[in-house]
Every structure is written in structure tokens, then in C-alpha cells.
Image 1: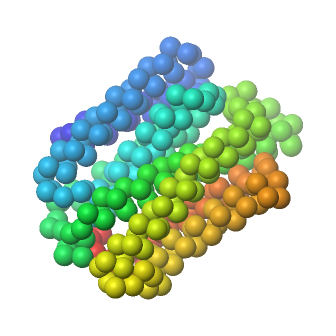
Image 2 (image 1 turned 90 degrees about the vertical axis):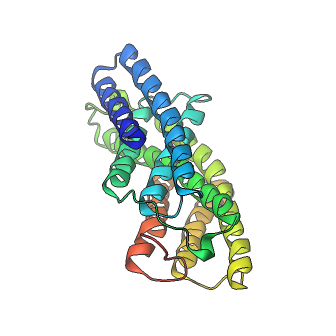
Length: 269
């Protein structure tokens, strides 16, 4: 019931953000922001209730993982909103959150017994850091999509419905940098804690398990983006494309590996 209520509030917030995108009515935007904040608080309560019901950190099933991912994107965005103002950014982010919540809603919500290998204090540390990192990288993905849309309109001089509703290319580029400088260190820390947990559980820091391999691929993509941005001076379209590709790798690491490849990390789907 809590999850259903959270889902409904997210749906209302997303609807209002879409209405605001169309009307540009500031009162509607304020209502949308308040609803999203309320959804984030209710989602936090839902996760706590899930923890109490499961008796362990709810980050092992497909439903729990995607739900926590949506929660991470929500609070990453809300923390971002306290410091920066990016025009209509909330509309794009709310659509991503809603997509994640819909996937979580369609997944089985059955509470499963925790496998022995996951009965460790490393579970909440490693999993929460890794997924929270994905929350900030998701913001970078949204910024990348917005950048490509705006860039296309400027190049074709097609100043349509999106042009006046999207921020400048410079603002979107700065957004990408902000998300990368927060998300990448957290992603690195997530991999490091995973390696320490692997050493404790399996006696080796790294086994080239499919999820470990794809985590490394994802890390290398973002490390390459970080290097090109700060060492060579990449800006604009290339960083937007790399942010999108990096997030695609994030999604494959999170889900694709579980469903398409088997390995030591495949426990519950």
C-alpha cells in the first residue's frame, strides 16, 4: 500500500511537471516540486517499511533495486535543486523516475530470504553507494538528452516548442560536469567496497564475474569522459553523447547482466 501510494504521488508530480512544461505556469511548477518532495519522503518511509518487513536491507530483488534507484534519482535531483536552477530539468528527471517506478511496480514485490553470501554488513554499504552513484549519473543522462535536443534545434535554426523551454547549452554542459564530479567518485567507491566484500566472501578482490566486468567497463567510460573533459577540454555535444552511453552501460550493468549473463552476482531476479 505504501509503494502504491508513493507511485501515485510520483505520477501526479510527473503529470504536473508535464503541464508546467507546456504552460510554463510557475504555480504549477511549485506544486510539482512539492509533490516530488512529498513523493521522496513517502518513498523513504516505504523503504524503511520494506526493511522492517524483510529483516534486511531491501536491495537484493529486482523490485527493491529499481525502487531504490528511483529513490536515489529523486533525492539526487532534490539536492541538486537546492543549489542550481536548470529550466525544466525537473520534467525530464520526473519522467526517468516514473519509468523506474513503473518497472518496480511491475516487478514481483515478494520478500525473499537473503542468500548466505549476501548476509553481510557490506550489502547496505556497497549496494547503496553504487545505486546512489547511478542516481547522479541518471541526472547527467537527462542533461545529455536535453543538450542534444537543444543543440539540434540551434543547428537547424528550428526554434520550436523545446527551444524556449530548455536552458542554454552552457548551463547544460555545467550540469553534466556537476553530475560527473559527484557520480564518478561514488561509482569508484561502490566498486572499491564491492571488491572488499568479494575478498571477504570469496577470497579474491576480483574474479572477472560478468557484473564485475561490466562495472569496470562502465567505470572506464566515465573515467574516459572525466579525463577528456578536464585534461583535453571536451565540452558540449561529445560529453552529452558520452553521458548517455555511460548511463546505458549503467543500466546494462544493473539489469542486463542479471538477465543475459550468469555469474556469482546472480542471486534473485
